[in-house]
Length: 431
Image 1 (tube, rainbow, N blue to C red):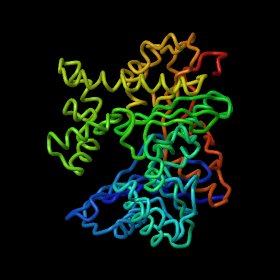
Image 2 (spheres, helix red, strand yellow; image 1 turned 180 degrees about the vertical axis):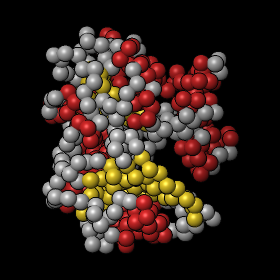
Image 3 (cartoon, one colour; image 1 turned 90 degrees about the vertical axis):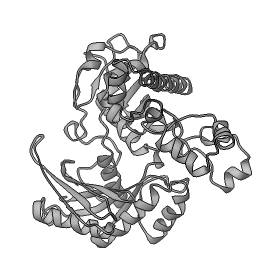
Image 4 (cartoon, rainbow, N blue to C red; image 1 turned 90 degrees about the horizontal axis):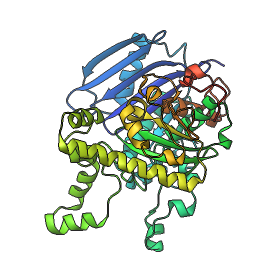
């Protein structure tokens, strides 16, 4: 079966897209349409070549709405390739951040589904409205193919009531849908399956801790391919220290700041989501800048880095206890894949739990999956690049009932396409 899947990740003022070939799982093109609704918008369209070769085109023009943005995207495909006639999308997959408790799996988009996503905007006001705009614009641009919503929260619908419930008034919790939903689920699912594929073992046999560390960050305990615990909560604010988000904090801090500093609800929301985390502590939201400043002697940056690692180690220990047995720890996303200092610091001192990193393996830079633990570590520590777009494409194809090169079970079809080519695996040791 020939054709492609178009993957769309839409926000309120921008959307990203990828065109992925069904048979090879190769990315054919990608792009960004941003500054929608501003005086001047921008379109970046990148055509993938052989190896790492890419042909990028960018231009600026007014983009009044998402529908106009999709028209510009189609023009970019027509002018710069690849041809959508020769690589016709058989379906469009949409990333939707919040599916609440309603959506447990990828879902064909219907008017009723759109209404449900709109209704859940109360739980994700920064994300779901943009997703709806992208869905509606994409359905206008591609009216004859199925559209599938893939939810960040769906992977975590396997959490037990003990894991997803907050200890507040039960009636209020039910009325206002207050519970842990978890996020980054598409990444956690892809990475946990890719790690199992790399190790040559069924994902159903493994207990894993996946650490998705980017500007947003979350931890997930995965038992037998199922999410059993995750650090983000009703919103993406809870859990680990992030670039601009506080992560875990005593709720009474908010009452104190309201009473003593006079901060209102919107100001507190802005503080915790956009003015806290690494940025709030150090004035720098990028981990690379924080580390550089800390190494040059900047005290606030050094403390921010220590707090970041302290919180990471806290979650690793807690999830080890929840799982009872641990086979592997997996680092992924921008910081997790590329920052050896974070990986080493997060697991330092855990040798008593059988977790030992090999310094040379950890420092080696690579874009493919690899082992960074020592040969005598009873827990295998991996770095596995995430690929949320490929996971969305796989789930989209599976949801439509079509058959192709994209696997329906979420595991990599090939080492090349999933970036899980073995590297550094100790001989004879498949843990």
